[in-house]
Image (cartoon, rainbow, N blue to C red; front, side):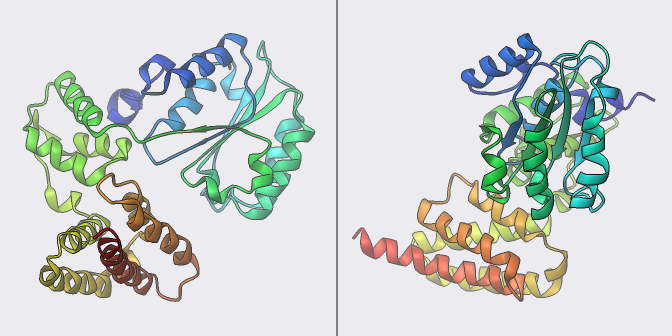
Length: 327
């Protein structure tokens, strides 16, 4: 069975630059690369589901600059334990770069997805390798957290920052996919999925397919409402209550948050929560400053759940201080 026709995430993945939602100047530049059949080494960064990997796949395909993909493109997952370390760089990547370009292509490309998971040693080794083999080899890195990429490596790459897709665009995309698949749906079900999975378009499309049975979209709300979704929802509720000075309403939400953390502390992806909260348009900058600070301390905290609770209480105080400041 053809996986492209089975998985909607692949079936509806953009295959050309024009199919992507990108700034005009980005499209112009990427088309210029394709026309010349040449690219600099690239760093594509931004939130999940914003088109980074799609661009990388287009550029490294026949629709881009590579004809012999099996020979001239090495695709790696930077988050894998087997590929993220310095040993893989020296034993696999560098030997690959020493081989000549095959066919009529000008270049060979190493595409490292989720490059923000690379070890520091691997990232620094790649810095030297990029320069050493620059004549006919290029790298394409994608990542969510550009701050995880060492400055010395960033300086050798051409950067493109990807922004969140508008929520209305994603809702329209969902409706278009369901119509093409002849699936009946309610607007409220689509809104529910998008609200809790936004901004990750891949996960949204995956859930659409999962919940489409016998020609109808039937949403299992419990499976959409993950622990991460619940904590994000409660944090936003606490902030809204505080901004509106409805302090008494916070007691219940805070206790529910504590109970959730006590029961599921080791099952929660806190990094996803920080990322989701930071990208929420409804949260003001003075709260996002705290979110950013606690996303950094999360890695070194003795208790990630206590770190998250500290974020809540400090954010409450930030809101109150800001309200007093603008009186």
